[in-house]
Length: 157
Image (cartoon, rainbow, N blue to C red; front, side, top):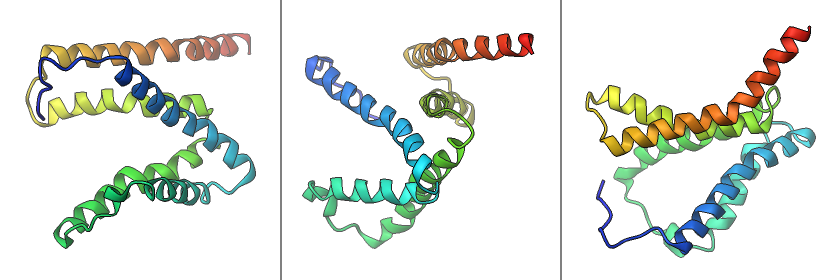
C-alpha cells in the first residue's frame, strides 16, 4: 500500500465524503431491518444488488471489460465480500437489532487488522496499533450501554 504524500491533508471535502460514506453504509442496516418486516430475508440481497447495479450504471468506468484471467478472483471476492454478507445480514437482523448488526460490521476492520498481524507474523506499525486500539475502544463505548442494560434486565428477572 502506498503512503499518501506528506502534502495531502484531510480537509473539509474528505470529511464530507467520509460522512456521506458512513451515513450510506450505516443506514443500510436500518433499511435492512425495515425491508425484512415486509419481505422475505432472501429477497433483500437481490434488491440491494439491483440498487447497486443501477447506481453503477452512472459510472461508465465500472463497465469496462475485465480480462478473463481476473474472473475467478472477482467471483470469489463477490461471493465472500458481497453475496454472503448481503444474505447473512438480513437473516441476522431477524434476531438482533439493526444497530447491533451495524456495530458488528463496524468492528470488522479492527478484527481483520488484528488477525492479519497474527497471520502474516508481522507487527503493525505504532500508528496502526493505535488505530486498532482506538477502534476497539469505540466498539466498547458503543456496546457498553447495551451490555449494562442487558445485565440490569437479568438482575431484575
